Amino acid sequence: MSRLDVVIFGATGFTGAKTVEEMVRIAKKYPGLAWGVAGRSQSKLEELMASLGKKTGEDLSGIKMIVADVTDEQSIKDMCLQARVVANCAGPYRMYGEPVVKAAVEAKTHVVDVSGESQFIELMQLKYDQAAKDAGVYIISACGFDSIPNDMGLVYMQQKFDGTLNSVESYISSDLPREYQAEAKERGVINYGTWESLVNGLAHSNELGPLRRKLFPEKLPTFKPKLQPRSAIHKHEGVWCVPFMGTDSSIVYRTQRWFYENDHKRPVQFKPYFKLGGLITTAFAALAGLILFFMSKTSVTKRLLLNHPRFFSFGLVTREGPSENVMNNTKFQIQLFGEGWERGVDVEASKPNKKAVVTVKGVNPGYGATVTALLFSALTCLKESDKMPGTGGVLTTGAAFSKTDLIKNLNENNLTFEFQLQ
Image: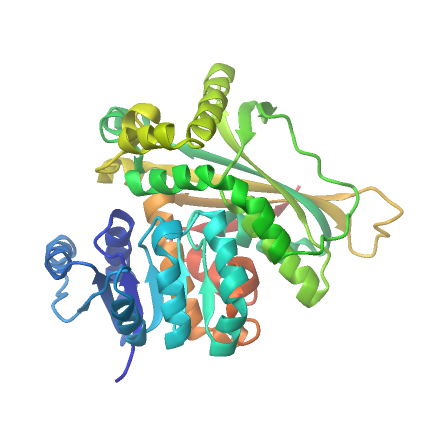
């Protein structure tokens, strides 16, 4: 039986449906690309494809629909056996991700996903890295807003820097025009699935230390000058900022460690931050983040967070998710500020003397740029595996795609990367 090139699993969920819609657009550029959709319910899959057919004006009657449920191991394996790559949109991944990884390795199928859950991602590397290598498949998480802009952005800077890059500080910002803010208050800006993953990740954050000691028993050497963390609330270019608590630090660390261990490259130090605006707003957001963290730690308060997302997120999270207008008009920018030495300079005897910035821009970070990055990650596994390292494994985007045309393809599809010397 011939396999489909890509199967989108979790297609009827919020992110999955956006991924399918984006695939309809992208597939026009790749004549002959065979793809399908998968989910728990045949009727919901049919409704989704009928709805997207009307919305896009495309005939989607020939797109294969596969019924697969993570609680049914055989159905997941059958799905994987029908695909060369599975684009997994079915989260939270802590709860539903491992059956897909396990089945994909057994079926010799690549997997890409948009997980932002460090515990899941690192556990999969610990458990399945060698098996994936033996099977000749790539398992690559965090192929969305978490964490392609920062991870691939830093890799892009390393490639363009022409010297020794020592450290990078990243600043994330987003903007929604005033005319759409009332709509954002009504429908929120984040879908419930993203909130559920965040709460569960915080609830089990204590697992990361022991997991990382198993995954990386030996520490990386210390390089100087050491990049010190900025204060919890600080000002950058006139805007108040806080540390960014996403998966990016974990992903970038694993990428840089991979380069150090496999290519003998000096690892780059990295710290990400989020731009919020005024001091009062920033202080309130920092306090809310602390409250969210502590509430996630007990079963009673965690249940409150999950049952009442709108209340505890101050209207940012809703079960129905943000409107099309809000998503399509939310712009984001990530600036990575790098510092290091010019080529030929003795890094041990001199201070850094070279600076650069990579700017990553896009629209709809959670459900637009994310699904574009996910699908081009899947296509890269299909079309450029000869440029990817080894024979497979559980890898980060930076380790997997550093020698491919992924950034070029994203630049041509509204997720842009620009490099400048400062």
